[in-house]
Length: 87
Image (cartoon, rainbow, N blue to C red; front, side, top):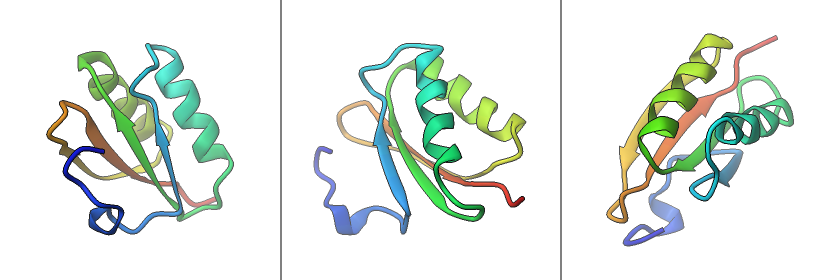
């Protein structure tokens, strides 16, 4: 991640990079990552492009997960911060 150090990232339990994926695989990969985490865990998702930036947060929220933040990186990608919903 350009101009960002690992210490600058929000506290998280897992991070995935889906910048090379296209829809619908962007949310499929995000959902699989969320499914592997316990309730309350935080997932960072690095994504890029208009469709993933709109669709991944919406699909995660539709499933009841909490969208904590999304911030842009200098390379045009973004980091989406999701907390997995409780059981």
